Image (cartoon, rainbow, N blue to C red):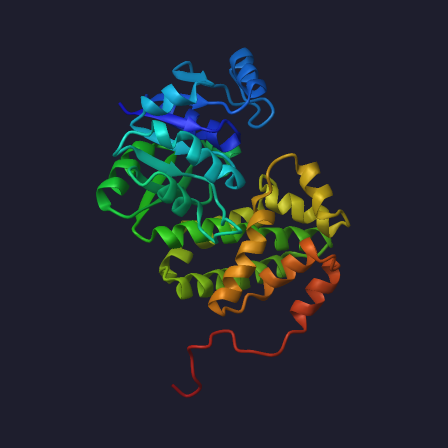
Length: 337
């Protein structure tokens, strides 16, 4: 039995706590606010973030971050991506050397252009860091609906240990040594999901959605390859798998925010209405900076940035994507070869 500390009691942190507790692991769920702590203690349910999912009795809810982290064999970073560095700094003094530290947030830090796992590794180098990603809406994981994810880790021992920890009859886990690719897939798909939501908000159909998903994974793969990630990772769970579910599901806060923007709401209005952190908004600027840095063409990412931050109308953005210069679908193929 592992002693697992979940840092962050939002929907995903709560779902992971429930998943592991059902397996019989010793789980401590750390709340970052007194309001959330009181809610969980009173109702044994995350009513505001994960309604309908009761906490098993073997989940200990606490605000004592220091002792929870000190006692853990595995610490899961389940705060939203804008707060990963701040939280990593806060818990760093309490993390025992060799502790497994799993990032489940998906994002890219705008100033440094680092993935969340890279931030955790930088702030807490004595831990054994990894990333858990894939098509995994908390609302479904919490209800025990079959889900598959992937663990990205630098060494096989860490990957195997965490695979065994998270694996259950409803939660299948694969392993992947391409930590960068797994991390990038989870972050970049949120930007494409905003575009898919915007298209939905404009009233476009399945053809448009399929185009955005297909060309979106192409953009993600091109950037990942330039940065040193494996193209195979983008064809897997953390790439195309997560992209499909995030672009198609109403559980996706990025898609929901995009729909509102497509319907005429401002970025701030959409984020306020969704009532949760819309990580694609934070990742969009970073994705554009990475594309510029590595000289990678990412037209969808570019247009999303213009809509979010420059006041461009969503309809004009779609029109400009459609009227781009003619090009081949796959640049590595040649006629007559």
